[in-house]
Image (tube, rainbow, N blue to C red; front, side, top):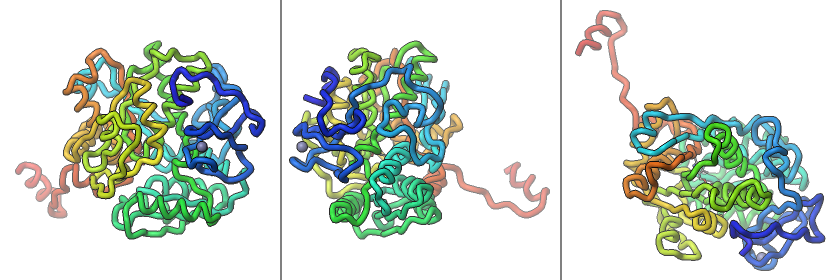
Length: 419
Ligand SMILES: *Cc1c(COP(=O)(O)O)cnc(C)c1O
Ligand SMILES: [Zn+2]
């Protein structure tokens, strides 16, 4: 199986360009990159992965941000707004409270548009340019549209975003709007938006930049590479576990790919690979269902609901890449309630870290698994927080304390403070 952790480095096919090619994870067919546009396999409709004839070692990385890892990416440079190199915060109080050996928070909300989607877009938009695309499109629960609008605009391309009407947080629509995307508010949920935008892309209307696009996931691999390098520097070992929120499971797939490539390059032992641990909201948990049932395929949930709008997804398109990632690394998946998500948002805020609801799912999930004894007290864990607090100001205000009205003079304010 090509997605196994012990798979050998694949042989370079004739259609590779400069040692880079696309390969179907289902049937193994290969395709030339940067020539014809293809998102899925022509033969069997399976998901594609970018493959390399030469895999880098840690010594090949230099500089900072996503493009530090150019040796692990399909291009040498991209359409960049200085994405990546996000903080990996220590959280001593939360660490003690959860009860693990070490807990670090990788805050992806500190990217240029406030989510990890920027890491995928810096690569994906550069590939679109290479392919000569002039219009870019995505379906989005919000953050992909903000990133696409900013990177597309910086790359001098038109952008089109399809959003589920009434289900996108205010900050995200504001970003897509100011960066000049054409915003279509679709009657339906995210999965409906993705169905439509895939039809548009297949009809040649636009270049698709959802995480179905294998190039985007290459950029997102760098989250894993940054975490591993930081843990090696601070602890001399990679983390035991990485916990992350799961929507379309693009990050889960991307991190797993980063680890597989390090194993193939001889930089990481199979036994040391961090356990990939996915967290979903109870109202949108098809991946958790598949992991719990030992299923090979994910059942599409037509009705999904959660306050964590960024992961309000019923049909995770990258499931065929992510399920092996969770299983082969010895990880798991867990669902948490909206109340647990809000509580975790407050826990992080107490440490000075402001995140949107979906992001806090990772910490809520870690707590849950620690309580169940699935995570043990001697583990070193990295939790991914995917988006910034200001993305969803309404959720932050609802989770936080209320402002108190006071009169416009000092004596009145003092009176009020004494109450
Ligand atoms: C996109 C997004 C997710 C989901 O990530 P996947 O890679 O699709 O699983 C989670 N949190 C936030 C804030 C996001 O923007
Ligand atoms: Zn195929």
